[in-house]
Image (cartoon, rainbow over all chains, first blue to last red; front, side):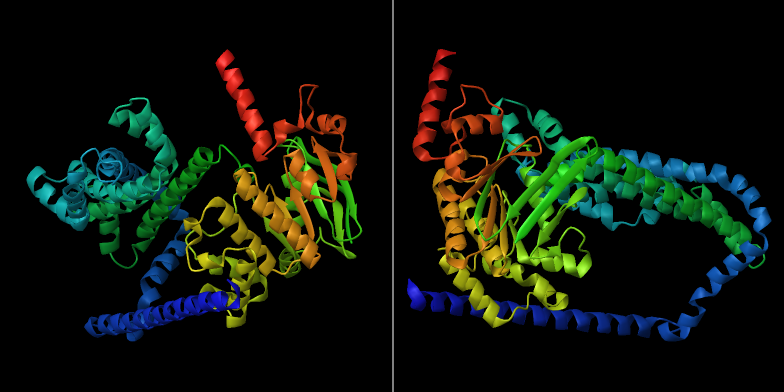
Length: 289
Length: 273
């Protein structure tokens, strides 16, 4: 012990600090280079150029808003007019999220190391989830619309498939952070795999599942609105029509944007309310105590 | 030096701390004892301003601490170090970085975000770790250490703050008897050598008796005893813990010998069932 010993520890630690600082510096340089490089490339390929186009960026929103304000008295009528299509869009999103979350939950348990009943299946199943995420839902929807004809069902299937991929991955990351101790406890009493998962893992992770599923629901509402553009019905179809009518008709588009915005706000508020109840059965101060 | 006057904290309908008054004239080692839920933790958390008091005042060296806000409040917190039952270290960061967190109040936020500390601070952190006998663990991640070692890292973080008061909230409740002894001895040593005030919540009587100059007993949010360890008779202890005649000091003990007796007693009970 003594000074000799301590100076050795100090020297070793300072060497570690220096190499860490060097790594951080290099990472910072790489990050800045990527950022600048990526921006330059994107700007070169862009037909108009970012800086030239920037002042025009707000032209379309400005048109929509100014027209909406000048015809504000018509907006409530439009809201009522487009409400049924909005409900159709939400319906598509809701069904897709529900189906996607249930299938995604099963997938997530099968691809989490430590929980998976068949470890050799983890890799292949993860690749399946990758594929589901990689293919844009609009491509799946277009193929399905070609086969099944236009309407909400192809849109629902397309969004559900993407949701399985996305939630399967997110859920499995949540599962990885779950404590294995309760699972071990249940294994010690002779519980089956399904019992261990349902009674040992799900109670720990359900609040996080729920918030990811609701976030996905929000995303899916937007996705289902976009799929309306390609003939899947719902509010997207109306939005395409009102936008393509051009200037002088943007007030109806504004009403549809307003409906979508309100829907997202309501879903968001609902999700934080339910989540607070799920996680804070105990209050924050009790948690710290 | 430290005056606590009628300090009260209510959570909804519950009163956690009920008009507590404590006066400390010079740095001492003070133990606060009582059952869980007696309000010991809330009292310490109010001192550090982790929790705001409902009413009452804390005055330290003439300064009213309870009304501080923003920078002034954080300055006070840096002078009044806190040690937690569950250590509250950052598990994925190395031991020295955790100790250096003690200097956060004095340092520029941007520099600390990139973990840039002056070399002199790093040397001082390692010096403190050596004093606590864990210098060889300096480069390891905090989570790789045992409970007793982690608690000593937490003490090192507190010392790095160069505080006037060290508050220890059940510092040994998560430790085995051997480690508990090491941690309590370190706290006592810090009090004796550096002349810092140490206030420790303890739920075992004998620890308070052994290491503290002054013992404060709390029951249901109220201070029911304030005196020297010698004045702490079994009758007083029963009163603090709200126990009947079957209560013995051993029941709250973490000492190895008494613990063994307790274990033996439990084994007897188990056999007779």
